[in-house]
Image (tube, rainbow, N blue to C red):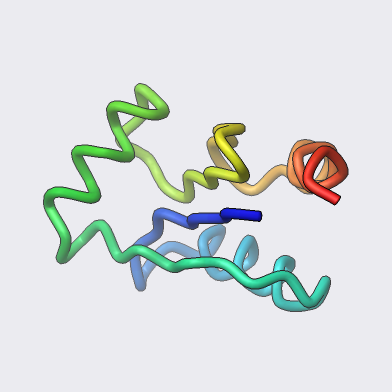
Length: 78
């Protein structure tokens, strides 16, 4: 399973999304797009969005902190 969270340190919904994954015991890669311009560009290409968080769960792109969509994407990975 490959999970990437594109986030910034000042984004409250980014923290909520990461905390949600941690509570579920799910490992993920956290990418700080405020310092990594290449990853920021990658995030925009994947999502069409400039806003964070953007989650990439095995190719399923979720924009924002949406527990229903996160759970649905995780279901497809187990």
